[in-house]
Image (cartoon, rainbow, N blue to C red; front, top):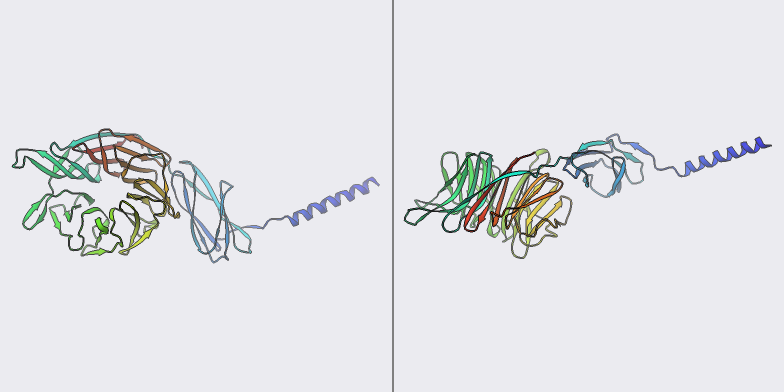
Length: 435
């Protein structure tokens, strides 16, 4: 009798377990055979990583779950697009990670991708050595822009007044050149109506040592042999604030009152910006897979800021939501992260509609931003303010030898800062001592 009861109990127990398994079974997870979707790793900074998820005609909506190191990191739904870039954040520098996704189309099974392994970027060093130079001994001198061709070929432009025995009692220089050992003061001429004029130069852009452009109210171009004057007044009636180009056959100038013009190697074309705001910055960087350049301009006034892209000689507004007036410069990595400076320091991911403020970095106005990569970004501004982002944290230094930095220029481990102290122009040359 006891054995019979024991058998009945075991059979009941097995029946309950089987029933529970059948009724509580999750949706089956099947491996993806790459016909349904493709997950690819695109890029990583020190603390973020970007991925592309491409769906192949799956029924919408599609639920996506992202797993980092086998733990669920986030989930989201795709309602229309077949091509989605997403990112994960709060990672650590120089660390290995694994990511995979589970994709569930509407009324279908769950499909799992292969694991993608990647390593975040390492940080760069905050350790620098530097030298400071002052120029000008009469009147007010200042330096506005810098171009680094290499560590032994650096140009800075502006106005430097040196007292002498000439009829005026001084000579004005509008450029200065570094050859690796010393700075040389230069007078770069603009030839007009049979005379040479030595105007204040406010912008410089160098493609190489034999192709250097200087911006005044017109242009001067050094071709390796001589300075050529270019009258831009018929199509660009304004001061040139900044210049950028992918080559000397794809070259832009921007300036006050919304003026933009493009040089294609043969002719100039005026580009209608749709604004009368002064444009203070233009920069461009290669997009992914080197399919083209993302070119962005910054325009501002005392009551608004506009950000816009240039493509095919047309202007497209970018969201300036969250930005105050007084934003004057930008640095970015296309489709990744964007920084702007001026009346505050702000950033956004490419997918964000609103800019976010970087709080507690500085209370001073920032005039210029440049970078080598997402782990090597520099900002300078008022009262000798200097900031460096190494991809993970910020370093700040005040150069008391400087009242105001107008420009920072960066190339690899060489950094040049230009500005003024009192009535003297100032240059600071920094070298990274540790990679």
